[in-house]
Length: 212
Image (cartoon, rainbow, N blue to C red; front, top):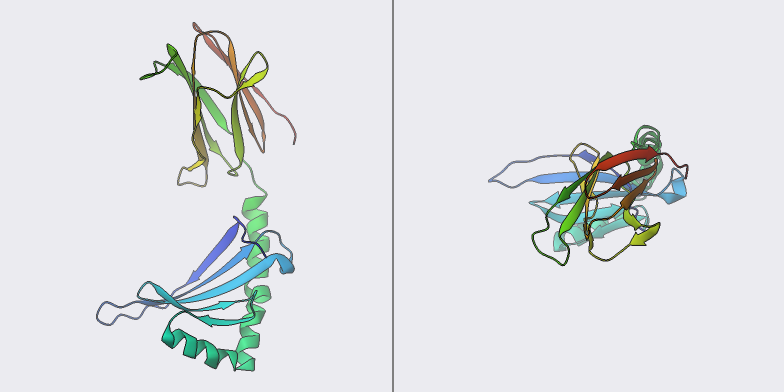
């Protein structure tokens, strides 16, 4: 199964302190749907920031990454009872949590808010610059573009990647250097399209929802 950008991460930590060393175990589920066949369970054993042992449900066995980890992987792989219990974690541990994650998070969406304002560019071939700030939207996927006379503008445009706000929301900043005339920006996300028009002397904005 190919890795998915959607990942539910549940952490169970065992901490042992002796002369500053730390040991922990991390369980996580990688998925791209609620189907059991699309879910991968991984348990990583980490000592002093180094992963030395991992169980991967896609492989159905343990894999060691250090000399000691290789020996432990061989020992656990030869224990049918423990190996079966680890394989079952994909269903008993991941399946329910993935379903809850889809229900509580992935099916939710928040429409973006857009603010458009003018700035003087620090340098360039045009005397003016429009800045479009799109923020407080979820999920992450969004497209921000500029239109002139109904045609998308691609030159003199700079757009950032989606940036995390730290509160589950995202934001994007896009700029267009231009010679003043009527320009229209379009922001398209999961929840609709925001159209904003501006001229050299005044700015007006409208919001239009478009079903996907």
